[in-house]
Image 1 (cartoon, rainbow, N blue to C red):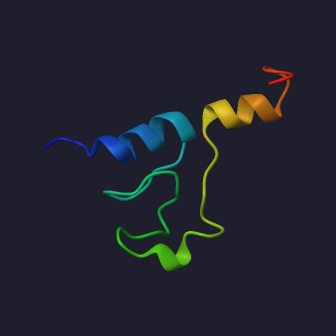
Image 2 (tube, one colour):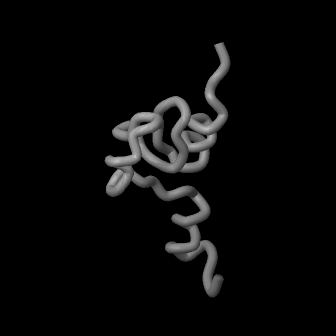
Length: 58
Protein backbone atom coordinates (compact mmCIF):
# COMPACT_ATOMS: atom_id res chain seq x y z
CA UNK A 1 0.00 0.00 0.00
CA UNK A 2 1.35 3.42 -0.93
CA UNK A 3 0.36 6.75 0.50
CA UNK A 4 -1.36 9.49 -1.49
CA UNK A 5 1.36 12.02 -2.26
CA UNK A 6 -0.81 15.08 -1.58
CA UNK A 7 -1.92 13.98 1.88
CA UNK A 8 1.62 12.83 2.67
CA UNK A 9 3.00 16.25 1.70
CA UNK A 10 0.43 18.03 3.86
CA UNK A 11 1.30 15.82 6.82
CA UNK A 12 5.02 16.37 6.31
CA UNK A 13 4.98 20.13 5.62
CA UNK A 14 2.02 21.21 7.73
CA UNK A 15 2.08 18.75 10.61
CA UNK A 16 -1.56 17.80 10.08
CA UNK A 17 -2.96 14.48 8.92
CA UNK A 18 -5.47 14.91 6.11
CA UNK A 19 -7.62 12.77 3.83
CA UNK A 20 -6.88 11.16 0.48
CA UNK A 21 -7.00 13.59 -2.44
CA UNK A 22 -7.10 16.89 -0.58
CA UNK A 23 -4.36 19.49 -0.14
CA UNK A 24 -3.91 22.29 2.38
CA UNK A 25 -6.85 21.41 4.61
CA UNK A 26 -7.32 19.29 7.72
CA UNK A 27 -9.14 15.98 8.11
CA UNK A 28 -12.57 17.65 8.35
CA UNK A 29 -12.69 18.18 4.56
CA UNK A 30 -13.66 15.32 2.27
CA UNK A 31 -12.51 15.03 -1.32
CA UNK A 32 -14.94 16.74 -3.67
CA UNK A 33 -16.75 18.63 -0.90
CA UNK A 34 -15.61 22.24 -1.13
CA UNK A 35 -18.42 23.60 1.03
CA UNK A 36 -16.52 23.12 4.29
CA UNK A 37 -13.02 24.26 3.26
CA UNK A 38 -13.35 27.65 4.97
CA UNK A 39 -12.00 27.41 8.48
CA UNK A 40 -10.26 24.09 7.86
CA UNK A 41 -7.17 25.40 6.06
CA UNK A 42 -3.73 24.61 7.50
CA UNK A 43 -0.51 26.63 7.40
CA UNK A 44 2.64 25.16 5.91
CA UNK A 45 6.01 25.32 7.59
CA UNK A 46 6.99 28.08 5.13
CA UNK A 47 3.99 30.24 6.00
CA UNK A 48 4.62 29.73 9.72
CA UNK A 49 8.26 30.73 9.31
CA UNK A 50 7.32 33.88 7.38
CA UNK A 51 4.88 34.84 10.15
CA UNK A 52 7.54 34.19 12.77
CA UNK A 53 11.08 35.37 13.24
CA UNK A 54 12.78 32.93 10.87
CA UNK A 55 12.18 34.89 7.64
CA UNK A 56 11.69 38.66 7.66
CA UNK A 57 11.01 41.27 5.00
CA UNK A 58 9.68 38.91 2.37
